[in-house]
Length: 152
Image (cartoon, rainbow, N blue to C red; front, side, top):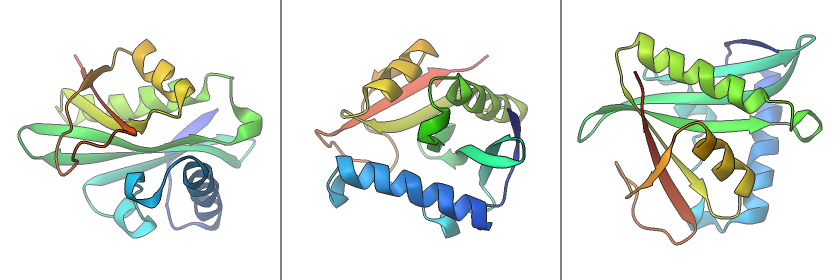
C-alpha cells in the first residue's frame, strides 16, 4: 500500500469518508459520534493521509495536533474499506501517523474510539495504546473509549 498526504475534499476522499460515516452511524447514536468534518480535516493543524492500492484510495487516517493540557496528536478518521480489511493496512496508516507525530517532536498520541469496535480496540492495544480518561473537549461517554500512547 502506498501512503501519502491526501486532500480530504477530493472525490475519492469524500466517498471514503462517507463510508466511514455510514459505518459509525450504524453503530452509535449521534451524540456518541465524534467525527471530523471534511472542512475540519483541511485545517492547518491536521494531516490527512490516504492509503492507495493501484491508485485506488482504500484507507485513510488523520492526525490533529492539539495543545490542551500538553501538546499531543489525536488520531482521527482511521478507516479501511471492508474488502481491504485484515491485511495490516490500518497498522501501516497508524505507523505513518505516529511518524508524523515524532517528526513534529510530539511524543503523545491520543484517540477516541467506541466500545462497539472490538477490532479497533484490539488494534490500538496491540500498538501500545492504553485506556485513559477523556481528554481535550471530550466528556465521559459510556460508548467511548479514550486511549493514549507515548511515542519515542
